[in-house]
Length: 456
Image (cartoon, rainbow, N blue to C red; front, top):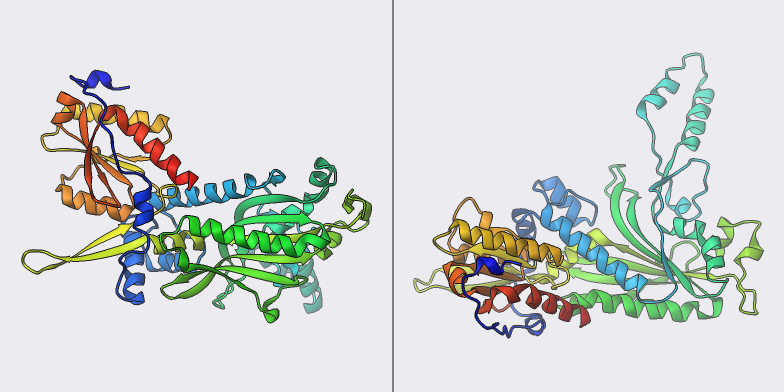
């Protein structure tokens, strides 16, 4: 605590701003055109270090593939992954989390990924050595390369394979009773869509839900509703998220039905998650010869059917950023147009909850107060931005604009008045209203605010 930094302690000040303010601002104001919105968004996420600069990196991020994330983008990505994981593992009692390697031995069969083509880990030097075997005929060279590739590790194209592999022991864990699920997040490699031949690396989030054959269709509908509800929970404009059935000509493999969760980007609609009703074929193929271990104990001895949910977290990250951007236009007294850009990210997703700044006349004592407050927020696991360490002094209006573009929920300014009375000024990102509260109340206020957002 930092009460020893404050000379006089006044009664605690009430702060009236609540999480409902964020809800009330949903859907207000936005860029005039889709093209302007796309340009503004992509420029902002580079300027504020959500992703690293560079046209190639921006293009990777726009495609929904893994790119070089900056500090804010890394924190936002972790927040999205955390909320996805919570939504799955806490939604039902019987959901187990697993973690499997991103590559497997060359001898293993990829029952799910086989139809999409293999991608393997290969050392170019090893292939070169084979091709340099001058005494081998053309047919022998082809055979040698083929055998070498067969022994090379396989990159996974999705996370479903790991769940299928671990089905039997987890099925025994639940006493062979259905339904139950297996959740996992991790990196996967998708075939290139641009013809370059280079695989695209994506962050996937997967739930494989095992249920009885007669209930698989109902479970697909259930999870489709739940997933759309989850995406909309964190949206400033929920209507930008929608769902649609997959057409018959788009069905993959043994899937009998499919549902897509879609986001309307400025450049067009793209899927964030895809749900499939997959039947039992892949499970039987994975565990050939052990059919008895796949049978449930519900009296019917049925084989579990699969409902899979596969989400692209990188594209989901871009969707939340796009959905949260608001641009407010205003004219000053000289009729000069000014823009206020704000990332109104959901309180649970915002990378930074509060920025700590110092008012005019910065002193060592003020920095000590900031350091004490910083440590207290860290202990409460509240992410804070150390604005008091800024090396280039900046007018408060410019600082507020910077923090709005970073999506920072609140800005707390510590001043000489804080030393004398224990009061500091707190500005809300969503309302721009500045309120006064006691320094000892900031931590508790932020905890309550974030908790309220979690319960909505």
